[in-house]
Image 1 (cartoon, one colour):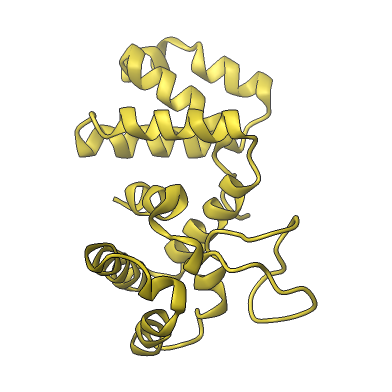
Image 2 (cartoon, rainbow, N blue to C red):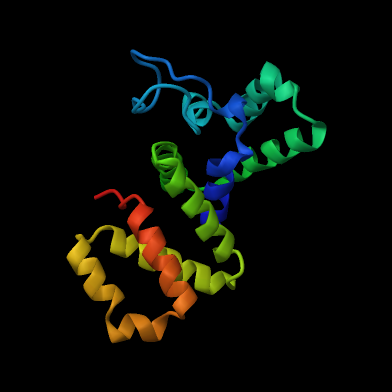
Length: 177
C-alpha cells in the first residue's frame, strides 16, 4: 500500500499545485537538488502544518481550484492518507518522489511499467518484491547479482517477480542508515 501511495504521488496524482517551483535559500525541510519544480515540494513546505491547515492551504491554491471536483477530491483523500502514515513512511515517500524527479525519462517510464506490473500481484507478493528490492538496493552491483542469481532467490520469486525485483533494486533509493 505504501508503494501504491508513493507511486500515486510520484506519478502525477500530485498536480503542479503540489509541485511548486522550489525556493532557493532556506525554507522548511531539506534543500532540493536540481532546478525547477519538484514533486512533493508542496508536501515538504506544508509538513509542519496540521492536516486541517494543509487541507485549507490546498483548497485555497489557485491551481488546485482549477481542477475538476473529482480530481480535487482524489487529491484531498491522498493528502489525508499521506498524513495518516507514520513520519518515517512519509519521509520515505518524499525521498522517493525526489529520486523519481531526477531519473531520466526512460527510467521513469520503466518504473511506471514496473509498478503497473506489480499491481497484478497479490498484496503479500508485492510486499515481498518491495522488501527484496529495498535490501538489494543497499548492495554493490556484484553482490546484488550474486543474490539475484542464487537458487534461493530464484525459488522464492517467480520469473516475473524476479524481473520486478531486479528493476526496482536498480532504482529504489537505499534506506537511510
